[in-house]
Length: 424
Ligand SMILES: [Zn+2]
Image (cartoon, rainbow, N blue to C red; front, side, top):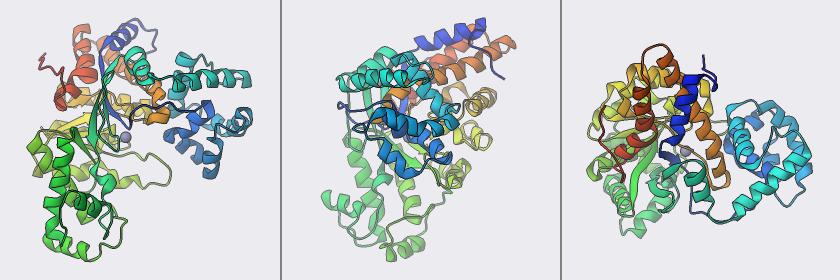
């Protein structure tokens, strides 16, 4: 059930949503550099829609080949077209269609001429310095972005804040990434009992470098005991860690402990797979409950509404005062599921525990934030408008929720400048 954008209440709330100075609470952006691209490359660099394309039958090796902007655009488009037709009605594709339509003049990718025109506008936009400011500040009304770049980075327009991903370097094999990082920091690793202090040192160094949060993933968490850790240390030459490996559970515990100490949140991926062939059951969100119980002073930011486990996830932010829900990527995975979460959360979760939007793109696909945000605003506005229509909310209350979810809550949770302590 969804109100059309033409419905008077819906139109009013949607317009209001567009005026909120928005925080993009999750991106994978590194500092801006000019990039060579075109429409086919943009589509195929989007790991989300690529997941759909491969699922529809596109051979994965063609993804790489057709991304090459030096090969003829028309040929690559015609090769892609049969697969695009299978995925074009999905919500990943919708972010592309909305972005290409509003920013580059597309109207449904109907002809080769259109593909070429859109591609040349797109490549011009990516070539011109200042894309981040044009996109976020001018086109999206986003003034603040939380980003998970490999290295710390800050920017002014929009303001960028860095979220550190320790698990990217959680290779504990002898001479592996973790040991290399320890060596750089002057930490000697002799046995499993050196790991907690080493992890703490790496986390605190990231904080000193400007980290405003740590990022991990959901898992069936329990505190690892000493024997498990000793055993894992003895077999640490196996570099690929399986879900729930004792070292991963230990790292998550140290992230939670240090985050509380330095007063920043721990963000956690829950639920959905970001590419093909992933067993997403490992990120089922309720597996985290023992972690929430063990670290009550830590603020946890749960990404993606736990989709496709929205009902299991929903009550987490209700039950645990240390848990927030973040709709990043959820609007895009499925607008229908996201709207159901929004409605469920209005029933169950306090208003100040919800973050409304995160683009979740990379430098190559950053412009799709525009289409994703349009879907996000429409989703939230649609549910709020329905509640107004049903007599459960008034317009002022709906405006208050829009401001809280898209702007104030992320600023408050991450202690960003401009945070407010507005109460209803
Ligand atoms: Zn992400």
